[in-house]
Image (tube, rainbow, N blue to C red; front, side, top):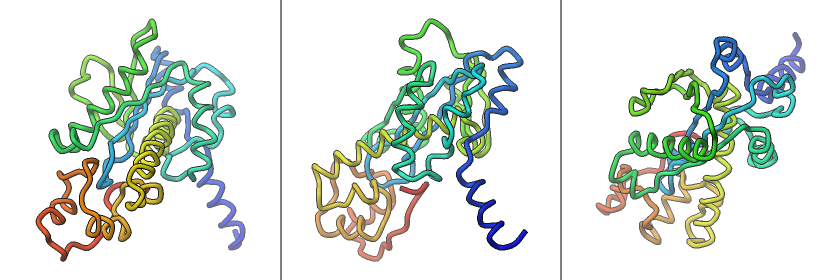
Length: 241
């Protein structure tokens, strides 16, 4: 394959829709209501960690076509995510979103707070339905507090599995909307641009304007600012903005 062909193949792989292989396999075993759950925002210095929960109609033959382009939200542009957000919600049997605030992250730690956001998303998704989920698909984690429900942990699940990818998209769109609201409230911090992640601009704003209630004091960069430690250099944490 020549250089141009390699580039086109790479672009095709990058833009492809996440697979339904795992959902279809579990559906064939009798798991008819699978809920994919994923989180966004574990790494930022400010704002909530947010999770999505999505139950897709696995039996639909046209499901991949309806959700064409849905994949790991980090590999999509903001415009692509926003264009598919409502489609996911319209196609889904049920969906939910949950968040844990910066205060809860400070109180609990990031992993328990992430689990809290995921439980809230699941509760939102299941509050008005007349069935119990048969299985939860999770991105490289398990939730011991939900041991009564069958769980499947999939490495890089948001890239490989459509239910998890769909959850990641609706969670990302929702969290970005929250950060845009914070940007309007605190315009000097650049939240619309970096969504609370660690950037040079964010660090400069912290040094110039101080720490806000939405900043996570649990995190080392914020602790350094609180100590008056000017030696700390900005470094992005977690997934991309």
